[in-house]
Length: 180
Image (cartoon, rainbow, N blue to C red; front, top):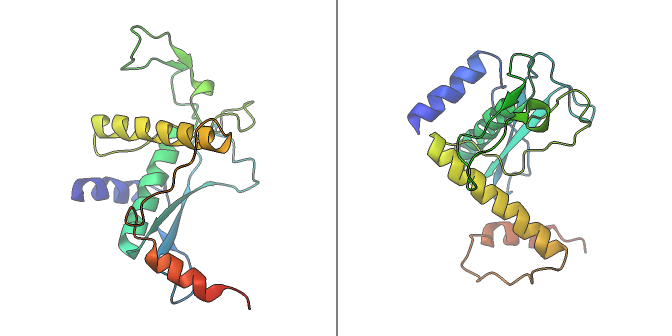
């Protein structure tokens, strides 16, 4: 993790991503939120939201972990953006169905001219190695596919066991916030 953090800090030092910016939440809020701004490479279009830069987020019970997650997402977003310095097309280094033809860079990157936000980061992930990032990307794609199936009614949404995630602190905080 130290090597990864050193690489993320180098990206901050080069101005590719901003330092983590902790968000002000109510004092008794059970988790932390951090944002990082992502610089736009040459030729990259800004987000359709009108923001001059993309934003990455990190959420965790621990503030330092939220910072790390925001930095990692910022690095992921930066690496996904269009740049005039990139080659015109890329070929997959690994595929399940044999050979893959080159794919135009505009069909793979965020902010490519003329794409109008058509490309997003679903199915993309950063990691501590190529293998780690590959596994995380597959899990990211499965997460979005499963959520889409549940929301469209194709797959039933099953209840999670109460001990699946530590949601008690958030649930407790939310209970206190109800309007009376």
